[in-house]
Image 1 (tube, rainbow, N blue to C red):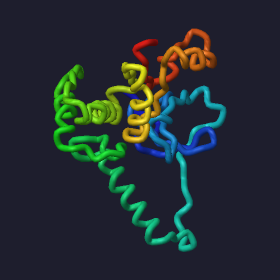
Image 2: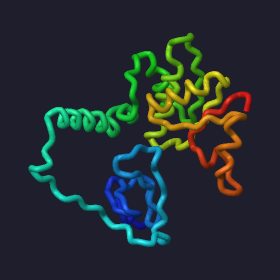
Image 3: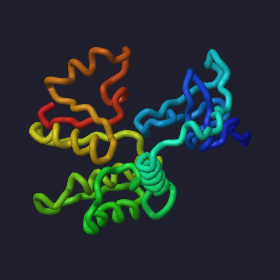
Image 4: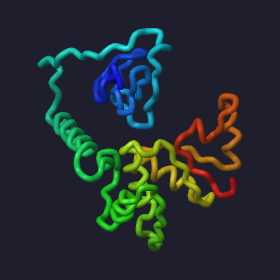
Length: 208
């Protein structure tokens, strides 16, 4: 098997910006994430169709004139520390969440990771944090590369709550699919596609 031209983790320049090469990239198809953006901005690039050649990115070395403040340095240190958790430890998602889970909320996550095909019923009491428990499972599977789509089925009055929780706690930008929004979402779709192929993260109302 031929080796990919760009190894995962390398930084390249394409389409006027810099990208990080992700796993599952091949000789002609690259799986890329923009530098400075999250996993929701990933895309695929087919090298033979690119108008301009894709080349390794280079950055000028830092200079003393670019020195920042101590508070900015501490903020950068904390951000790097949190991001490094993505590649070490038993959980890869902890650098991409904005919540500090309680110990019992990790139990469904650990149970899910033991399953070859994740099928899990979370039936905790009201107020225990079932949304967080489900979000932890989803975010972990996403960061492990096991899933790239999500559909939440919920009652109509909970759609906005799910959307807010996923966005601000787990950095998952989902769209709400209900009778009042379906027509607007479908209006700009290419021919032959559906909402669920164009929008990987959806929250579907039960009355849809």
